[in-house]
Length: 305
Image (cartoon, rainbow, N blue to C red; front, side, top):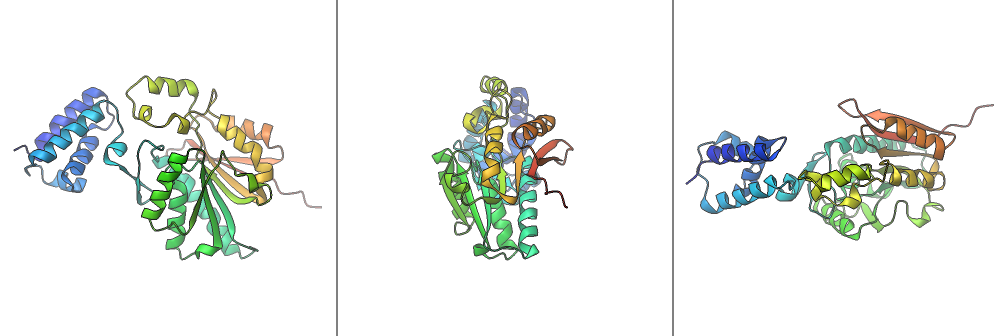
């Protein structure tokens, strides 16, 4: 019967040869999943025997990882902002960088709630929700802070009905189904003009089409994810640009929008905002690595007289 350490070591060599950037982490996570334990148990008990069935499952998972399939899809879960989300090929795998977008959204929501000037529920929308990661993380955080569900209208939208199904499953799994609504929509829903949003959060596709093409031809993990959730057009800003065009009517007069962007798109989003949103401010917020990550958009205040 094989031992934990020898299975991991052999898998590390296979995954390293296959081009994995994190071969040991991948191997430990997959073995833990196959056995049904936490990764720390795999690390701590290197001499523990592994049953035949679990070892066979592990070897199958390693073979699929060698072919480039993401570990998150293999395990069916992805940790994000302190919660574990169900993930599969219906939606993009949530990235750690997007946690900054969640933090900024929560901060803005709480600032507005505590300001005490609201005349009704705060209206918040997650555009291009995918797995529901942003909306669910926000809803969970508000619940932890004791914010009544009626104080915030939180809507998650996506153009892909399969992604919306996954988002609904995740919302129910985290007990926030009563705090969230879901709708199929290409960007902002049609009634946004009559009922504009106070806070818009969006992680739309921002990878250039040629880069997506190269990923599709490789064994990189993103090749397994929905192209619809990745492809941002020739410059990576096609979907983001369309959303900017909707903000003048879809965002409340004092509203704010947070948009995730690529690490090389800081100057491009500023230029696009100048073109599409004259008279608005566009601040680019860096992630923990110091790279451009979030564009914060809002109308410039009217000059005082």
